[in-house]
Image 1 (cartoon, rainbow, N blue to C red):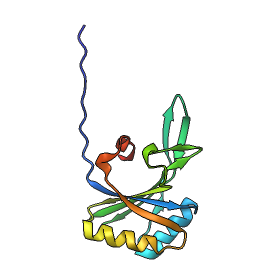
Image 2: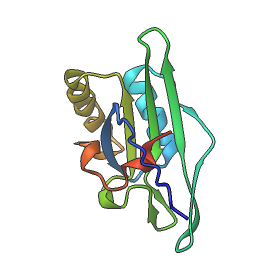
Image 3: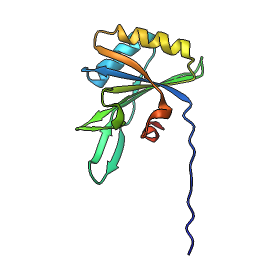
Length: 137
């Protein structure tokens, strides 16, 4: 019997900002809402399962800008000693931006760095990540 292999090629049509912060997810979300005049809303937690680590839940917030037709998603990178994207352990959170240009991305990073609960913010090239599939929602 022959095997059929399905190869999936996903599009990563978003930009990614890594955020290091000791603040809780709800506090960072509130600060981002205040800074950018958006309304990130708490969504159901993302659950990843593995035999080694078991079930891990990662917090998620979402904002949809109907006027500009673009979205923002804030997701936690750490849960019980595990990381959603293990190769970026320095990031406590990821800000996923859909339909933003590079100038807006740079300005957004500058503004995020000004938030008092943020240690640093940095751009991440999604295509260099081994576990980039974990960021598809």
